[in-house]
Image 1: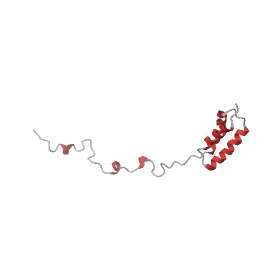
Image 2: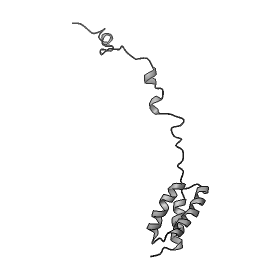
Image 3: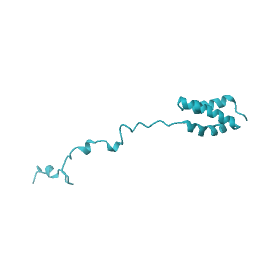
Image 4: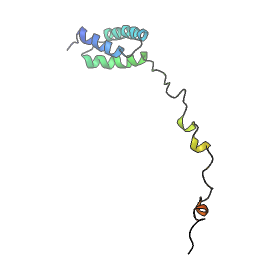
Length: 104
């Protein structure tokens, strides 16, 4: 079963859609040359040839999410920077709570 020109053009345009315009044009030329070099029996075979070729032309975008903020565990925290609220003991404030306890 031979593939039609419309199927090939649709496949090339779908694979090239995620590429930047200069890479898209170069990919389309390389894709047509690769499909002419082999005799594809269908869209699946054409995809198996063109998918690795498309990856060669794709440049992933830079990840700018963490550039300005840095890692979250290195951010200043009020809980870490502030002085402690009570004494450093297991009975924090027990003596003060029991100071006015009624005896008797």
